[in-house]
Structures are given as C-alpha cells and as structure tokens.
Length: 178
Ligand code: SF4
Ligand code: SF4
Ligand code: SF4
Image (cartoon, rainbow, N blue to C red; front, side, top):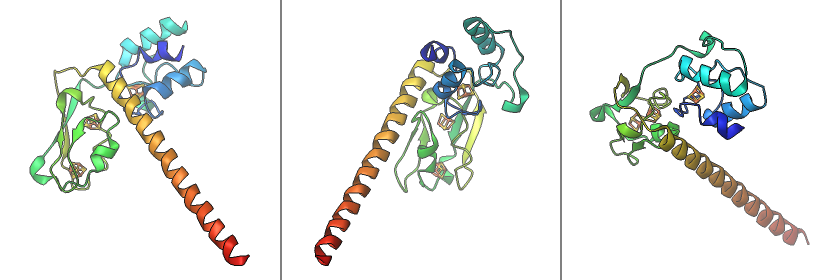
C-alpha cells in the first residue's frame, strides 16, 4: 500500500506535508496517521487520487501545510556563490553540482523546486523561479531513495568506526591497568 500511495505523490520531496519526503508521508497515510490533504505541490489532483485510492472523502488542501504552487526551479547566482556546499547537502534529489570552494550550479531538469536549498545558503544566492519545464517524478523518486540509502550507509559506517575506536581505547586501558 505504501508504494501505491507513493506513486500518486509528486516526488518533489519538499517536506511541506510535515514528513521528511513523499515516501514517509505515504507510510503515514498507509498507517492512517496523516490526512490526505497535506501535500501543497500535489494540490487538488493529488487529494482526489488519494481519496479514491484510500476510499476517503475529498477534503480541500489544509492551508496549515501551505498553498498549491505551480512548477518552479532553483537558480544559483553563480557570481555570488562561495562554494560552501551547504545546498548540496540540503538537496533531497542531488540536483546541484559543485565542489568545495568552487561555484555551484543547479541541474534544472532534475530540480523539483522543493526550495530546501534556499534557507541553508549563507549568501542568499539561490533564487526560486517559475518554470514551464516539468521535472521527472520517477527520477526524483529514484534520486531521493539513492540519497537516503547513501546517508544511512554513511551514518552506519560512522557509528561502526566510533565503536571500533571505543573498543580499541577500552582494550588499551585494560592492558594498561593489568
Ligand atoms: S511533494 Fe512534498 S508535501 Fe507532497 S508528499 Fe512529497 S514531500 Fe510531502
Ligand atoms: S536544487 Fe534546491 S529546489 Fe531544486 S531540488 Fe534541489 S534543493 Fe530542491
Ligand atoms: S549554499 Fe549558496 S553559497 Fe553555498 S555552495 Fe550553495 S549556492 Fe553556493
């Protein structure tokens, strides 16, 4: 059921529904822990589709979660970019390229317009603009899932490394006290 619900969501991964992406919102809907009217990018169309799938009555978009927005895209004012990489970390679909201390650029066809890169930018050089080009929800879903997998793997490796260091330290102290 989670996958069936997720397939109806826009995949911007914008977190406006109050969850950390479309799939977590889909999981909450499947568990009957969220309402069907929490996705501003999806608007009326998505609410209708969710109501049909979940056999629930139609509800208007809850304004507490924002208003429906048309397609939009992020643009970096490259001359102002200081290459801090904070936007790369924030982008849920890996639509920004760049390296530390170097200029960053948004791959516009891959940008869902989620706006999550805007607040972390220390020099306010990311602007959100309307666009007529539609991003690919399938690609956005794939990129989101790949990034989540990468973050989980990285966190697990970090934890394993910390445990290894702790064990080595304990072994050293034990040997010293023997
Ligand atoms: S598009 Fe945004 S608001 Fe809609 S389900 Fe996905 S993350 Fe939530
Ligand atoms: S570039 Fe910015 S607006 Fe576009 S998908 Fe990434 S975080 Fe969202
Ligand atoms: S957060 Fe802003 S300054 Fe930092 S790399 Fe991204 S666009 Fe450049």
